[in-house]
Image (cartoon, rainbow, N blue to C red; front, side):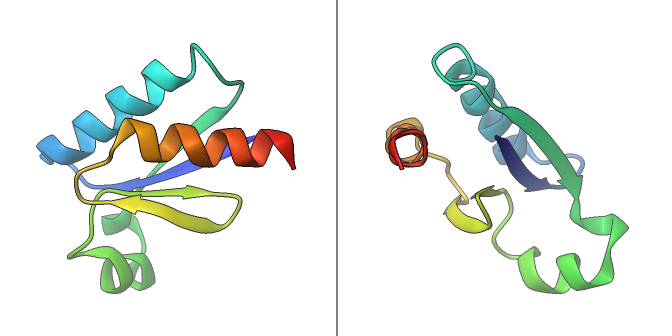
Length: 81
């Protein structure tokens, strides 16, 4: 499974979101694909006020302050489906 983390440079919330995902990698098998929204105008327009954004299986499951319990619940649902 690949989890997309939409982020940008110099973003403390993005760094925290990445840390949360790395902690969850100890419990779940997934890869983190970090995507800088400044590399794509469409992503910049879509996410500039929401960063960071976590996407699992094409669904946005968290943005702004990423909560570990919310992401864990989604990962459990994805694993059991």
